[in-house]
Length: 198
Image (cartoon, rainbow, N blue to C red; front, top):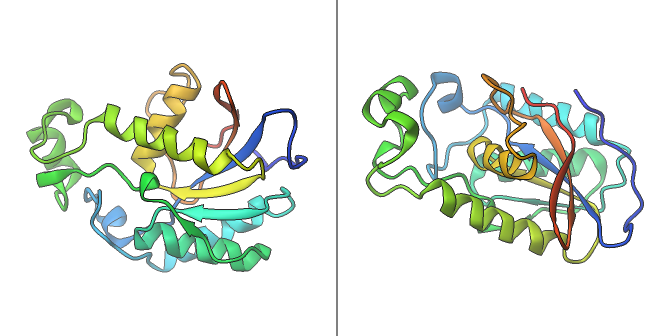
């Protein structure tokens, strides 16, 4: 686990964002595709959120934001309470990829029916998810204050691949529930400065 760094509020045009995956849900445990389905945390997920809060404590984060989906919002609320931040601001652009007809499927069925995860009826494309994620992160970074942003594994993976030129996530790695990836966001783009992966 890469510890959360301590940073000043602003260094030139750099804003630090800790990108956190929500805690576990029952659908995560069962291996189901969640997408925009609004599934709450389970007890393991709540404990993971508390663990993320401890990892982020002392990182000089001034605010917390989240996807409005319940699993991300609840994770952000747990983190915020634990480290003394106000209620999270909600951003639709941090939602997980909309998986259309695949939502609720077990992962094995999903990959069998839709090899490569493409051409799912009613689903967002990977490019659409990345574009809205990058736009949202730029808006979050605009005021220059370090922030924690709670989002979803698929969205976080796409942002990391873009920001690291494909180095992260590493082959075979999944973005773990409650994990934290530290980014710096500048006027020129996003850079990964702390990676914990699983």
